Image 1 (cartoon, rainbow, N blue to C red):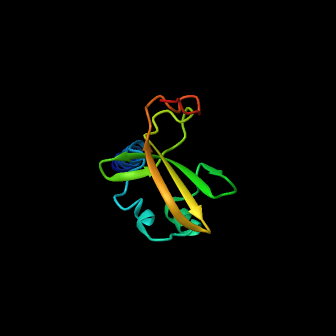
Image 2: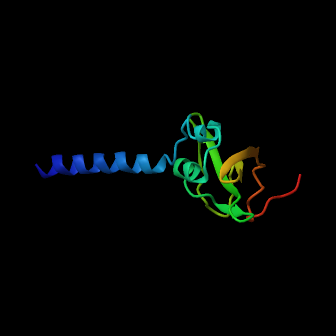
Image 3: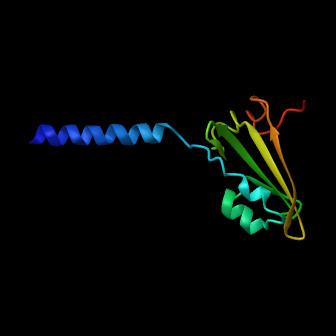
Length: 118
């Protein structure tokens, strides 16, 4: 009885460990909110989460993203921003999304936390 319970416990632990090790997964609709005409800042942050930075009195929001075969997702900050694939910059005008730009970064851009000029 104890051996069977121990095997189940070990099996459950293996499943949990593999799920944690796999990390975040992208979603194909993650950036869909950017397609909505005049999306508000609150709609954007509800869909994407809090940005990593805000500029110009919260008129410009910036996100760090990665992508996999499923789509985009928010990059986790580890060792500075090493491994971040994209910067997403959003500009709001009168509370509505006016422009956005998804910028592909170089792999070494964020190793020290600052971008390297091209």
